[in-house]
Length: 161
Ligand code: FES
Image (cartoon, rainbow, N blue to C red; front, side, top):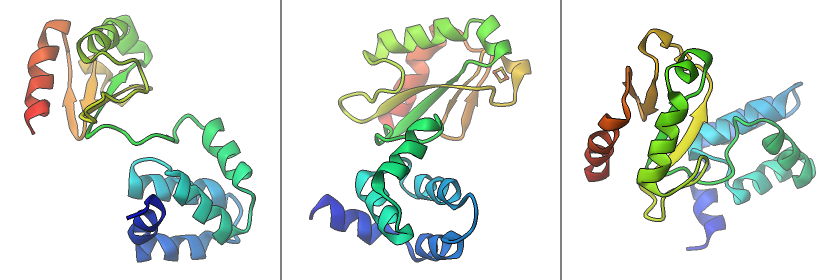
């Protein structure tokens, strides 16, 4: 099955309806790309092409927006996306050390995915629980008051799932 047909298959009715609804409204591109990322976890090239044709805008315009806003991802995240908070409180409590340790353990840098597709690593802004700094989020689980020593065990738990 080609990537294109795979993506087209997964363009849900609700996504198509959303695009139709926003097509002619101001700020539509951002709203639509948010929705696309919600559906796929990132902005696949074939999805970007399809949005471009549905909105009748050049593909370059879509990529202009996607690359300008750091929120949008162009590569598929790992099965478990690790977000390390680099907001002020977490930074001051050693968020950078957490990132470095994760890079060592996983053998990847920030914004990369492990070769087995299990983990991806992101540095994010304040996730809203500064009292627990330093904080890391994997999926919907929040790990607070984190130490480097806890990381191998936490990762092992996700590796199995
Ligand atoms: S700075 Fe990390 S949760 Fe707020």
